Image (cartoon, rainbow, N blue to C red; front, side):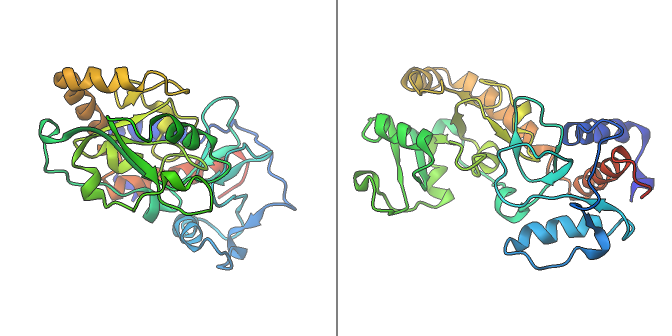
Length: 285
C-alpha cells in the first residue's frame, strides 16, 4: 500500500503523521509496562478501540512494543502512548493520536437542505453529567432563549427543567446553527456537523482527536463563542444577517472534512503514524 504513494502525496501524508505523532527520536518506552504486538489480545470492554488499533498493528512484527490508553483521554501519559484524544495545549508529545472508536466519532452526513432554507435557531441535544460544568453553564444561560432550542437528554435526577426528548440528526439539520460543546473530551457531533450545511457553534476546543480539532480556525471553520458564552446572541445574530459569511465558513468546514473521506489514504496515514512511533522509540519494526 505504501509503495503506491507518490512523492507529492507523501508530503501531505507526512504532514498529517507529524501532527498526530510529535515524538522526538530517542523517546523512551518502558519494556516492562509496554505490550508486545504478539501479546495484544481481545480482552477489553472497549472492543471498538481494540479492533481499530489491532487492524493497523497487525501490519508490524510481533516483537514490536507499544503503550495504549483506551477511552476519553484528557491527560498526557508519562510515556509514548497511542490514544484517541489528547489536550491541545501544552506538551502533548507522548499522546500519539490514532483513529480509535471510529464507528462512533467519524460519521458524516449528506445535507441537501441549503443554509438559507434553515431555521434561525441554535439547536442542541446532549447528555449532561455532573463533571460537565461547561454544558450545565450553557443550559443555565440559554435554555429558554428565543434563539435556542437546547436541552439535556439524560435523566440523572438533576435539573429536570432542562430535560427534552432525543432528536435525530435530520431534525438537527433543519437549523442554521448546531451546538458542539465538549463533553468528557471532544464534541462527538462536531465531525458530522462540519460536513453539513449548518454552522458548528462552540468555544475554542481544548481537546483533539484524529479530526485535528486543534487545527481548526475560529470563525473560519466554525462559529467561535467565548468560553463563558457571553457573546452567543451577538454571534448568532451576525451570521443570520450575513449569510455570505456563514456560507464561507461552511465551505471551509467541508474542505476540512474532505481530508478524512478517502479510506485508503486514512489507512496509509495510520500505518505511517505507527511506523514512526516504532522508529522514534528506537525499535526495529
